[in-house]
Image (cartoon, rainbow, N blue to C red; front, top):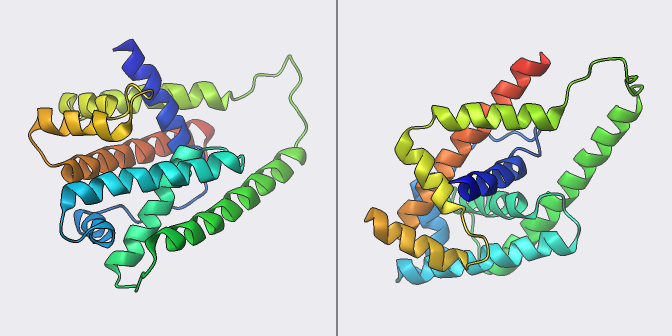
Length: 212
């Protein structure tokens, strides 16, 4: 349980690292199916495997370019592509299309980071005698609170979904889907929805603590 919790804390911090990026659109089953169809319209399991391989390639893309949160950026890239797919945009070469989206997202992230650094530079650092808001501690506290607000089933699912990073994601998640008695693509949708719920809860909690 401790290992599960530590892994999920890391992933939630990754997901919440871009607080000013709007996440109004949430991945739906239809959008995810549209994306899988671009990977393999005839075999859903094979499409899910290709999805995981594509996600790993995108994660490497962001890692090699020193992105702050490669895992979250890879997920956001695929979510944006899924949205375009369900909206009917013609995507002939999915790999190149994803690469283009990833490049735009990387530029957005770097610009946002630069804005945040400029904003911080405008304010003096607090003296040692002055109390200050520790964002990392606050995020962890909010995460713990939000995690406990999930149902026991969802809490266990999301922890299992992100556990044991040394194994291949596809193998791990196939086993989890089998244990739950659901298809792999259905598992990913459920995990995305739970993660989105956690993201929103953590952001709202942080906003209350900072008064923003």
